[in-house]
Amino acid sequence: THSYRHILVEKKGEKENVGLIQLNRPNALNALCDNLMSEIAQALSKFQHDDAIGAVVITGNEKAFAAGADIKEMQNLPFADTLKGDFLNQWTAVSDCKKPIIAAVNGHALGGGCELAMMCDIVYAGEKAKFGQPEINIGTIPGSGGTQRIVRVAGKSRAMEMCLSGLPITAQEAQQIGIVSRVFPPEKVVEEAVKLGERIASHSKLIVSICKESVNLAYETTLREGLHFEKRLFHSTFATRDRKEGMTAFIEKRKPCFSDC
Ligand code: CO8
Image 1: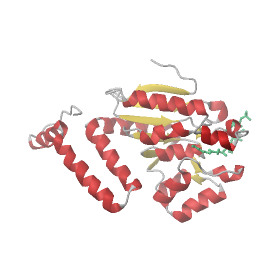
Image 2: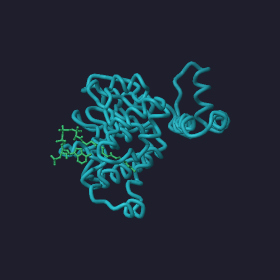
Image 3: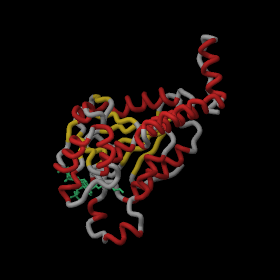
Image 4: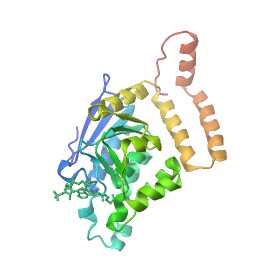
């Protein structure tokens, strides 16, 4: 066991196969200070190396998922230090994780909080959640994907509107434009995210990570390269025991027993 200062970490689900990370700086609306992001990176690394874990849920509280990077920490930061210290570089731990991550968002998901949600593979939101990129209000711009990921899911006009106006959008709007896949009553969001995590964790963890890698390629490469790589990854599943077991179980009309290899 490991104790953290700014996050709570536990295992959820009937089989304890879903990792839950709850951001826990309620007095600062879960502002994402450097230490908090380091702790997320550490917790994700532990879940990554834990063979029992098949998916991870990241959540905040009912008031805030996260109100952004910590403005108090950034206020007096000189430019040279942002470069030298690779300021906020550990944020990539979230998008680099090989296991699926589900964001369960209630309340404010602003700035880095909105970016953190969009780094996750699936976003579930409560009816009162708000998503926005308010950096422009404080003289800066999104620094962890806000200007990039919104364009890819919702197009240029929406991305420009959010990033240039600094105004937040509702959970319902975020769902319409594809940032969020489902909206629930606030008290159900984490439960539903864990349920989805359990469903994902019931599959072969090896094939799940190959599938995640392939979907992510759609973001990061051209269609031609993506289709080529997808085909190779599909072929590679034929080198696994779980592919053979899955198909055999179907033919034998029984449940597959995956061994993640
Ligand atoms: N950083 C630090 N402290 C914060 C932050 C924050 N982002 N947000 C809220 N807090 C603190 C407040 O200072 C306040 O603390 P205190 O009690 O000590 O004054 C406490 O949380 C409660 O906040 P409010 O009193 O403001 O609560 P309200 O309910 O009145 O307002 C809002 C809620 C509207 C969410 C408001 O707090 C707000 O506008 N927050 C700032 C939102 C924002 O601008 N976020 C963007 C930050 S910049 C960013 O995220 C850049 C990301 C770059 C990532 C780069 C990675 C490489």
